Image 1 (cartoon, rainbow, N blue to C red):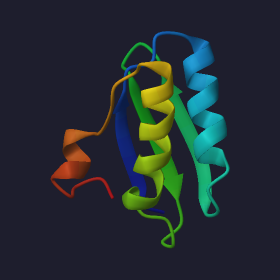
Image 2 (tube, rainbow, N blue to C red; image 1 turned 90 degrees about the horizontal axis):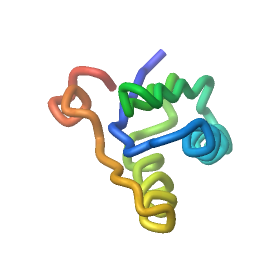
Image 3 (cartoon, rainbow, N blue to C red; image 1 turned 90 degrees about the vertical axis):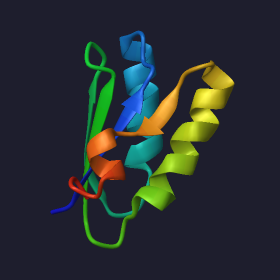
Image 4 (cartoon, rainbow, N blue to C red; image 1 turned 180 degrees about the vertical axis):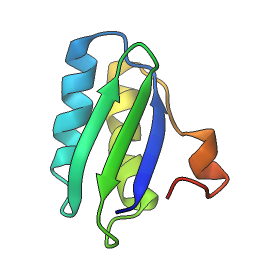
Length: 81
């Protein structure tokens, strides 16, 4: 299964829970792991899901919550999705 990673400025478990809820609603997402300490979100999904489908949802949350959101460098290079 494809994996996509995001760097998200999460500061607490509340942030992690919000990110999990948001991405968990995307059809085709199988698992969302949010590591607050590493500020990394790892999403396992099927082939129908793209980073372009998920990133705007995270960016909308990030703008409202005042948190940074970006595609992880490995994904930008095309090595994790």
